[in-house]
Amino acid sequence: MNLLQTPILIVGLGKTGFDTARVLIDKGAEVRITEMKESPSLKERADTLKQMGAKVETGGHTEAFFKNTRIVIPSPGVPLHALPLVWAQRAKIPILSEIEIAWRLSPSKKIIAITGTNGKTTVTSLIGEIFRTAQIPSVVCGNIGNTFIGELPSLSKETVIILETSSFQLSFTEKFRPFVGILLNIAEDHLDYHPSFEEYINAKKHLFSAQHPTDWAILNANDPQCVALANQISSRIFFFAGRKNESYPSLATSYIHHHSIFIKKEEKITEYATCSTSKLYGIHNRENISAASAVAAIFKIPQETFQRAIDTFQPLHHRFEKIAESQGISFINDSKATNVDAVKRALENFSDGNRVFLILGGKDKSISFSSLKELIERKVHTLFLVGENAERIRNDLQGIGIKTQIIDDYAEGVKIVIKEGKKGDSLLLSPGSSSFDRFTNYQERGDVFTRTVHSLL
View 1 (cartoon, helix red, strand yellow):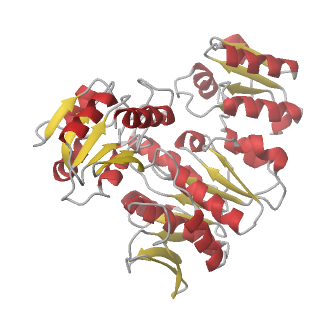
View 2 (cartoon, helix red, strand yellow):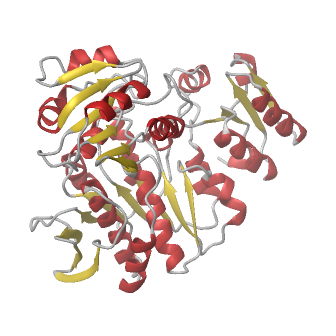
View 3 (cartoon, rainbow, N blue to C red):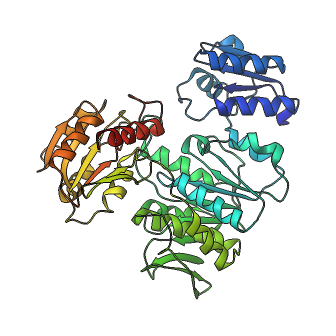
């Protein structure tokens, strides 16, 4: 099938849909775009694409507009029950994601693709910093913000593409083949989109499905789901871990022992760098650094270059970010924690002797919080519940022996902590839920929390 000589329907007119349409039109493809919503910004994008020669419908999907389509490209997050996807499946028309299309058109196949339930953006950004420091031509793109397809005009054959990929994007790949695929972890998430946890795992597994034996799969040695996938992958395995373990069944391993980062390759162990001078804090970030070190080892990045990169890398906002301290009480914004596993990772950074005031809640994603019971009882002093799923979380955690309170907003929780907290305590916003019940995204949620804390201290 000649992609550029085939009628294409793009579903969704957000940034991904707009970039995909613009690039394909520039290359001479016959493009139509269908968008469920209407807004001034969408109208502006629609008008731009119409002027370029595309056909656009907004405010709903119609079967007449779908007629004669031969490829459907859904934007990330378009639900599986969206009519164009249903019609395509019924007619056995290929559904391909933007990263699949971009891969086919890209002059460079030097792709490092990162996925996982948690840590994707941090690891993608950290690898980007490593390649910038090494002065290797590269671009960071994908689910991180700027689209892969939108970067195509700036790419050369030698550009290394550092690509953050989501389960939504991976679900509809076919030939997409990264030279290095990184799976950081797998935990229950997005069950409001994927029909089951098994389907979610299958989407993540797509990252490796087209790889060759000369490619690399970097997997978390401490994640049972990642380890289980190793036998199903045809590429070379490179395990990483945040702590030492002698039993990794792979060609190569990166791990951290005390503060030193070690690379084990072909039975030779090299002390590669130290993470003691990195600004990335927490147990989960030791895993992130270890994953990045595996990439550096594959690309033969000099040790001093890697060390300089991880030392200068600044932690990203809204990810276990200490935003204030007052009277010995720490206030931590972990708004990016949009699933239960992320909350677990945040709480594991506190010793059992700490008193943690934890804020949970947001939009319901059909995920149970009951697996957090033991950890919350051990780590948390007071639990605040807020948002659409507050009552359901309380039911999931029924019987825990700590004070639990539903609050109307963050200000209520902050005021209680200021009044009742003491030196050494922490207030942690780690919602374990998406933000769309009250906020545009997790960034807005974290910003609101930060402003609230600063206004009350």
